[in-house]
Image (cartoon, rainbow, N blue to C red; front, top):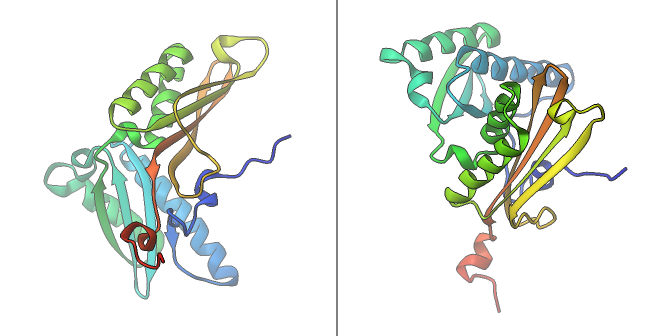
Length: 219
């Protein structure tokens, strides 16, 4: 068995940041962590078609800031902001504090690993060929300006008797390079033959340290 490192966790504090930005100890940490899971599930349940990807949670004394990254902010906001008001009220009911809800638009949904993984999983659930779904996702990502994409699906593909894994790659995906900006996500497709796992790596280029990029500190 290979020991695989999570691409996001591998790059934390280098070119990635935490989705939950707060500090707590003991039982308070446990409560806050489970609260974060509930907040994220609630937002995705309220707007399943809004293309919600990343949900950041920051905690301050007396309030909680929730930043929702979505491909379709219009659906999430709703007519005259009705949907946002409803979501904010539900979130405040879970937390018991004031919620500062911020919505950020994802400019290139085809370069967001979570949205790509979910899109492939939904296609598999609709019985579309896994090869067709993967090739289409790779073409769209490269067309949007991605430098590389790697896809992996595993399970009883096309209803086969034995489960297997299939990889596809286009461009370069340097998984061991720390300065590489790699977006990673996984999803599951619930098919009649069982679950099919989907993993997505998208390479967006190198993120260099500011000092080296600006020429400071180089003798």
